[in-house]
Image (spheres, rainbow, N blue to C red):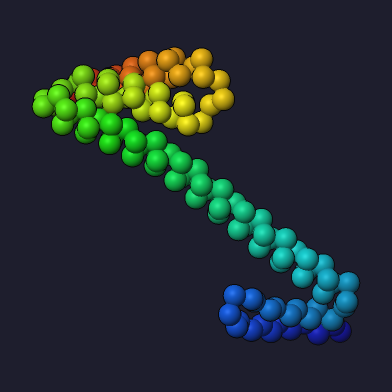
Length: 124
């Protein structure tokens, strides 16, 4: 009957895990599965973190733009959301697109979305 066991050690940034399934082929299979699984899980976590930070960055740019417009205008109303959204749409478009012709379209879209969100907040 095959004997299976597990042993591991942690020293510094390297993790060394030895798995003995009683068969060299099974040992290699399980070792490969664990290494590939670890790489895949790390990649998925890194991609998710990137997308979360990217979305947060856009939201942060919008909040900063809206606050800046409010400070410049000296009043707090829906126009700040419209101008802040338009500026955010333009900045994000310039930073991420190679097609500079869509900057105006993205600015208008950002302003429209921010204004609509502001009006919805007033209704609720």
